[in-house]
Image 1 (cartoon, rainbow, N blue to C red):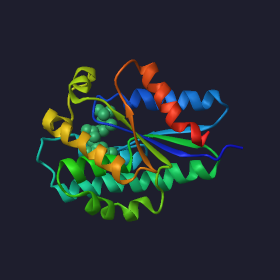
Image 2 (image 1 turned 135 degrees about the vertical axis):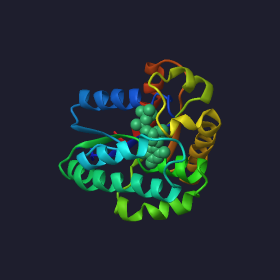
Image 3 (image 1 turned 180 degrees about the vertical axis):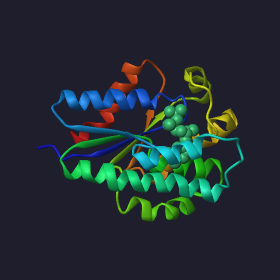
Length: 204
Ligand code: TYD
């Protein structure tokens, strides 16, 4: 039996990560594996309420420490109520965003620092880290063209902010190479999916 794994899809807004999470879930199911798909922030009843607190409202409304802790609180619910139980039950977990979103957005782009945000997340993680965090690495101009929904509180920070998030993801891939990988995000969804499956091949 293939060991059930926890895979996170990461990237800037409009990178195409949600499409890739969907395609990855389907590809794993087509191999006969059971898959639990989830998303952050959210993915549990309380997590979805925290999501609304985080994404509605004006830019600057929430202080940075409170923002970090609310993302971590939603994450704690997800780990305890969805991710751990699914893995224990033999299912793969494919999450649309996880810890590395906080490290890139709050740690790098907002300037709290990657180590500080990692520390703030320890209780939430409870030792549960993705086996692989795949960053769909799409240039900011391309991602801007792919976005369709109106911007939420965090997206409304603009393209300069997203460029800082992208730099944050690059820093994470350099610092945690065994866990965080960059997947070039240009080309069609099928082309990016093929790159995702290549990155995952050692785990299958
Ligand atoms: P998401 O639902 O992925 O938005 P979209 O589907 O539009 O990409 O994420 C919502 C926003 O929250 C997004 O701008 C990224 C941000 N975010 C953080 O800043 N930190 C975090 O830890 C997470 C999980 C998300």
